[in-house]
Length: 114
Length: 110
Image (cartoon, rainbow over all chains, first blue to last red; front, side, top):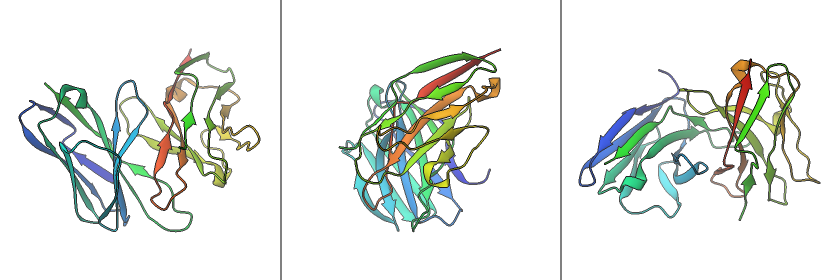
């Protein structure tokens, strides 16, 4: 699989579990994003990392913790989630610079919280 | 706050019929607008962006600043066009954050 790769594709966890979602891109992009896609809501931006520095935290609860160790990898650490956190979590990346505003999305990680 | 509105949750047309997916935005400056598409069991992907003024898979979208609209159009719908379509606007900041509309499901019937 090329482009933006997300693992796992499906995750079921209990409310007391700790798990992580992983995103990887080898497109030479230098900005990475986490989005949440719920059934009845628009796509919601969660976090933005630009040049490995978090530049945006869109009022996301602390039970979601992002990590960007380098420009190619992005994690979303999950802890004590709620059933309403069940959703598709999309990672995206982008090359920052003039005219380069296109996001490339991963296939998503489908999370179910029991 | 910037907002993108897609008034129709579902649009159902017959094959060969014209299609128009509506999108309105709220930003009054020089917006950057995009259409993303998500086919069944596939990832969200860029369909087109207004600065390119391109036609992709027969779809076009014209930016109308007077009406603050960026409607997506295709003269003759095909069954393979059935998908979820999202209109998005780049936020007026340096993060490149995209603000998405709620999405419209296009259903093209045979």
